[in-house]
Amino acid sequence: MKNFILRLVRGEDGVALAFGITFFLLVFLLGMSVYAAGETVRQRMELQNAADAAAYSAAVVQADTLSRVACINKAMSWTYVMLNRRCMDYAVDKWLERVEKKWKDDFNTVKNWNALSTCGTRIEGTDYRAGVALHKTVMLNSTITTIDVIKMQRKAAAAMGKSYNMLRTPIGWDRDTLAAMRRAEENLFQKLSKRIENAVKASVKANISGTPNDTAAGGAGISHVLIQNSYDTYTETMRNNAEQEKIFLVFGGFKPNVSEISMRGVDRWWKRDGSGEGFKRKYNQSGSLSANWNWHGIQWVYAGEACVPTPIMGATTVRGSEVKDGYFETKEAAKPFRLKKEFFADKGAIVVGVKRKLNNPFAFLFKNGSVQGLFSAFTVRDKRSMWAVAAARAAYSPPGNSQKGAYEATFRNVNAADSWNLCEADWDAVFIPVANAFDRAEERSFKNSGKNPLAEVYSKLSPGSISAPPGMNGNFNTSSREGLLH
Image 1: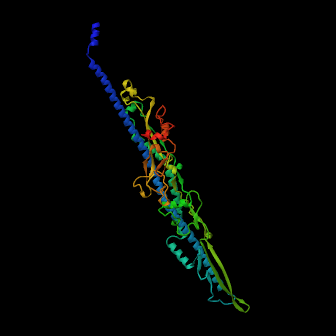
Image 2 (image 1 turned 90 degrees about the vertical axis):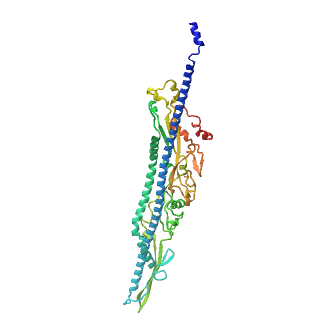
Image 3 (image 1 turned 30 degrees about the vertical axis):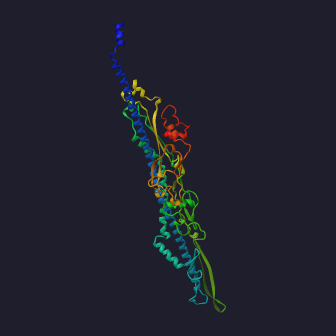
């Protein structure tokens, strides 16, 4: 036995087999590692693609909504101007009708007075007048004209459909249209959050799914989180002041000048009504829409034995307020939405986080996915998941397309003539850096807000049972986040 043992110890038979087995195990482990790493990288790329696609799809929905609202705002501005013009035409025509009637009444009164006589006979050729100095003249808003010109102008206006009787129906249509436009914008915004949510769900589902290996391991655990804010946190209704009304006129293709509403009367007798939400105007008697004239005549009466003339005279003034009714105002306010600066910060940002379980890539080799032996080396403990984040936002084509195709994702202050804020209908989705998603974006730069999108996504996704990696917790170091993102 001793000799046998010595021979086994000193012999070299089987050494190649021992080295072969050892080498095979090393190569086998290396091969499994390459496969495991490749599968993990593939899943990570798939996960990031899913997050990117979901965030971008959501931003497309957001951009589509803003484009639609901008189109409605354009139409709302045009309708607002047309309604004001029609209401002003209505007020002027109804007032001038009153002028005609009162002038005719005065004329007939003087004529009948002149025709009466106690002298026993009708006095022919007696002078009777209604006017300022000359017969038929009228002082109309401090301008001398004649009653015949007024009649001619009213007749011409009626031929163009501008008599007050004809204007009632289109004024009613314009009022209804403004109300319908406001409801349409509210409906678009009210449904926006749900539409974005549905887009994210559909995109995640289409871009990432479990594998047979995930099934063997008990599931891929795919889930996502969407961070978005309600529209009322980043929109506002424009208010009825001079500066915002000028901007609103630009929406409809007009100049930022109230004379675009009408060359005459605006801000004199046709004034803004209040200073609340939305734009509306109404009639306000302040010297304009005022017509006046003098009238005089003669009656011949007996005075003793002679028939002598007895003069009669007076003055008449007709104001627009005398015929004022419910059509002397736009009544329905034009209420366009526009974006606050907060839209270009955390309120308008869309952030999507997606996660999936880090399953052992060899679970499919074992019954019930219970990995054993060398393969268990590739099982990640603590039930960890891999996760990816993407951020996007709707952006607008800047006035004059100065960036030649680039879409602006920051708030920019421009003059009224170059207004873009929900009158520019060309909106599209853009990616924004995740690290800057919650920052205030103004004038093509990001201003730190101190808010951490990565920490918020991490807390909502809960991708593992252990604490967050350095830099992903509440003490997020802003100075090193670029490196962390890389």
